[in-house]
Image 1 (cartoon, rainbow, N blue to C red):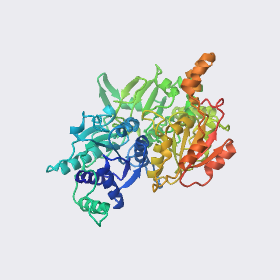
Image 2 (image 1 turned 45 degrees about the vertical axis):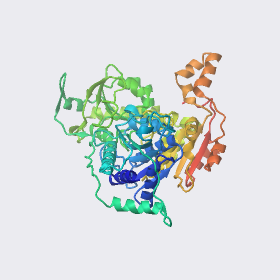
Image 3 (image 1 turned 30 degrees about the horizontal axis):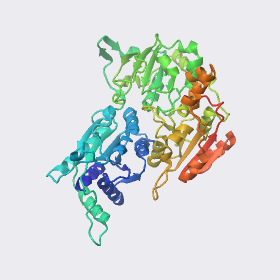
Image 4 (image 1 turned 180 degrees about the horizontal axis):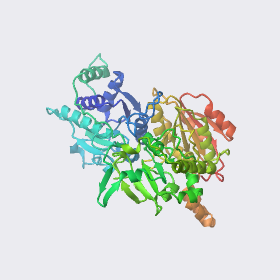
Length: 586
């Protein structure tokens, strides 16, 4: 209990305000102290029974801390600083079930602190119950990992625990480079409960002890300010191949800016300052801009003459959504300049999926963001792209995937937040969004998995400071993959979250990919497409929601959908859009 108190107080003193807790016996000391901290008003605790959902809830809570507040503030730099969130599990498979969320946090640079309880060393390798190798279980998916031996009462071990936790929080927040998940594997020996005194509530004693310890000075780790994304460097950047003139790169008129996930407002500032067209993914966080190209994916696909004139592409953030952008970056006549702000991607030296980057800058040069007298030909260049996007874009009115995405955008107001499933929904949004339709959009694009999406959205809704409402848009398989995310225990508050589920009875995204072309070649291939890829199901989502006590409404027309989207809602609710699977192939 003393070791757990040291761990929890160090979390609090290091700035952690949310902790997700899963039930378990070996982790009981941390559970008691977390509960005491919540009673003392020092911590918010969220209890979940499914560790996989808990991991994604922690991820969503951290993501929600970066959502703009109602006053429009978005934090400093291209990526708003995310507040680290802790998740606590017991030993055994409970630890392993956090792996998907840890992977997502790793690739998305989200600060999640994984605290797993473990059996003491003497029980390992003996066949002891619920004991397995948890050390380094997450491999390279964490920024840092440490094993804390079971406390024995040795002098100084509580201070060591505090320092280890403070270090973990700092590394998760980006002190040693880039934000991301960390793992502390903490062993505990029995007894695992507070001391019981007749006539006194055991937790009351824990609370009193915690408050006394929390008032004492704790280890402090000073976090440096995040890199602003602006590089105030020399005019010339020396490389192994010679000297590159930044002025020449800056003044290249036939340039487009590609803003990927995590790009932030600095990408819009760059496009505005240089009068370069801005091709921004919906998860880029660029904000409103006069240079945003509407329906940029369609413009890239349909305006080959315009695309052929591109000389230079400046990439900010990590593009992940479209093959059209990948083809642009792979063009043999295009110079790709990565101006990704330093430290925004830990898993890659720089985001270069096409392996065609010609120039990699440590940030965006300050001189690129200053006002410039833009020549008429560059203004015409921007106009050509904007017109191409406007001409290529299609307004969807059918109740299919793109149509549902468009309806959700139409119903979104400034200040709203939208969590998008990483399969068809985020692409449907990306294909149809226009510059005047910019809710804050979040999606798990680190490894782009569909698992944990409900829990991520619940976390975003729970921690978000957004002025508007929070929605999630996902497909039916994504929904079914994380139905435990709908569960919150007795006494746990339900998030104010409206989940829109496009139910086409399977994974129709595969029908729109190359697998659909294979499936159309004959009955054998069609059978494989259906069984191995689209995986049709017969699950009654109404019954699922009823089982979890979640409000549910099924709609089949655009009018019904829009009415459901704008209707007031409180707590967790689901709008199921029943779609004809034969027509939904986006």
